[in-house]
Image (cartoon, rainbow, N blue to C red; front, side, top):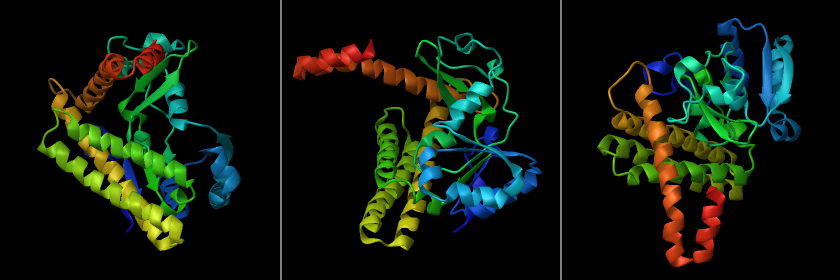
Length: 293
């Protein structure tokens, strides 16, 4: 059922919506009309452009509004890069926190609509990554960094390769399980995660069965379930981030602190893994340590 909701229940996402069971050829033009958009740049994946008619159909629907098309692996990273307030990436990063602060970046001046074809959580996130000249990954975050609209069209997602959809779904399951196992998780967090986990497991099983059986209607329903489950998983992470935040500050700062703490915990866990592996397999321990250097 077609429904439009706020992306996440936080103040910084007021005015940032997601449409479930969307029709991209209807919902995107309607949104552009509301914005009184004069120019549109289509940022797209190579495979979606070459192997489907999704982009051609959208380009035809938008007509003269489309002024350019650009193939890009990650439009969110590009958006972060164009929002920088200084040329030197390293100078923008708080090295202790591993991420930029709000004042280091200008808010985006270009609105963005996201049409996902996988279950990655990145479209729900306002934090982007980019790699500097030395090959080091940097994190950039701004409250206005999320797409203004997420259009979740199961028909478009159905065109993604089965392996891509299932692998991104397993990653979403991983987020649910890791959060439930977190000792700082509480009943509210677990309720969201268990709901998301159930929706994802059901959706992924039915997706695979529908692919094998050629049932298009069941395939679209399963994709919609997976997309809903992916958002529920993000709600659990949001509640956990709020619980882990210190003093409350305006907007979504508790969310940012929770993400920073999660990255720190992951790094600490990664550093201890070689010691744990050494007891089981000395060679793998050495290899693990080598990857961390």
